Length: 358
Image 1 (cartoon, rainbow, N blue to C red):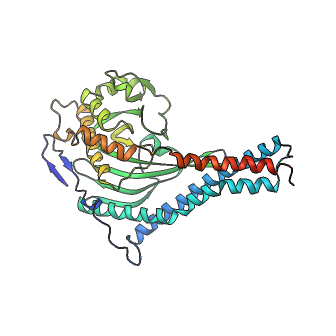
Image 2 (cartoon, rainbow, N blue to C red):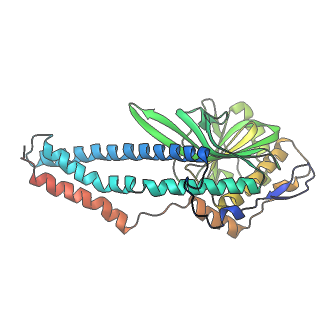
Image 3 (tube, helix red, strand yellow):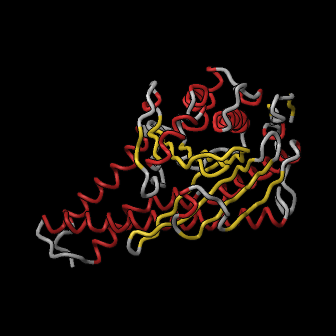
């Protein structure tokens, strides 16, 4: 991890990402990871199984209702054994695709953790496999139950920071809804007003909402096209002073796909899904987020001269490549569309043919 001097004592840095790109060694008898890593990998695998089971069960219930409706329209008299069999066949491809790749997914999770461990060692960072109910102050960390941070990487230079994957569960009635995201917390020397910056064009929906008592304020200068800014009315002037042109340009350049929250002496960057933290583009992006955090600290402390650590490392082309790597979701192609339509067509035909079977 290289760095250069800055006027305020903080330093700009560039991570050594070689450990994220070198070929993986052949796994030994116990795999790539030690005992702690294997336990963390097992926990992730169990959660993946649960998420898949919830998805398959939910789709199965919908398929059963669909078949019953089709059979009733053709003269059937409601639920029958044929309804259950047809629904099971309809959901079978989804179940095979979800559960069939579990072994490979666990191996991929072990490889990702192995790379992160090597990256942390190369950059003199600390890494923990798991942190239950982490002590964080952003809004999202007070939601739900079974709150857990995994692959927690922490550093202290140029400013203390913490990067982790985070998962929690919420409930809708009796139904459990799992959530996952990636976050970066940067600790600053200046006290910040509490504010939430909700990305306007980020993929997916945020898993949190601004707290009660906060209202959306207008910032101007085109910034409102990128973020909706929320804060308590009494903090509106402080928030506007914090969002200087330098801060606004930095956020618009490197963080338009994540939500941001400032709380006390912390700034949080929160994604709307888990990101590929075991890749070099993620940590190049993290360098720029740390630079934006430095700009926020300069603005909150009203420093007349910007710190050197507020300089963005990446070019426009590199930022576009990073965003494409981390945030672009694959489109739904023709095979996926056919995979959805065939079970529906089967359900219609089979439901009509078996409407009067008992």
